[in-house]
Length: 162
Image (cartoon, rainbow, N blue to C red; front, side):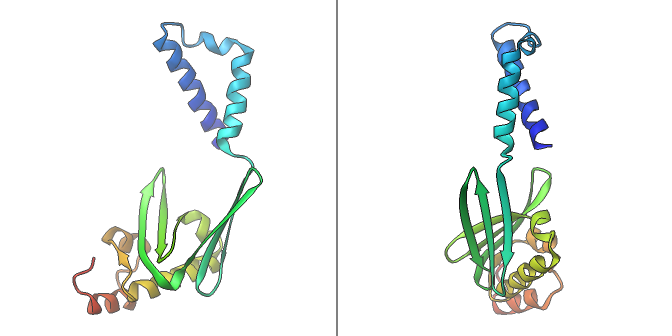
């Protein structure tokens, strides 16, 4: 899917460039060299060598991404989150979790694929909200925590927060 989308972007870009130069936009697709560029570029844009895994413990969430042989690890302390934000981007919901040191952005389908990981994340979010983490009304609705004791505790301690 990502390869087809990447190829479509490259084809549209090449055709647009041909229109700007005053040429027939379809004519460029008749050259085999352009197809090598389109297919090679689409493979590179789709990042087929990228592997992302998630792991969670009692109070932490780690995302490990391996791309082109380089591995990076980012983790947040779920029970000491300072800011929680759920938002809609590009056809899906994303979750930004900030603790005192770092920020981690994940997609809902990726972390909800394993129910055990999602349960640990959700419990950490509830605990952090009860301890005063910043969360907006949209995120409260997306996470469905409007009627939880965590939000009631936070609102009782800090009535002016949203």
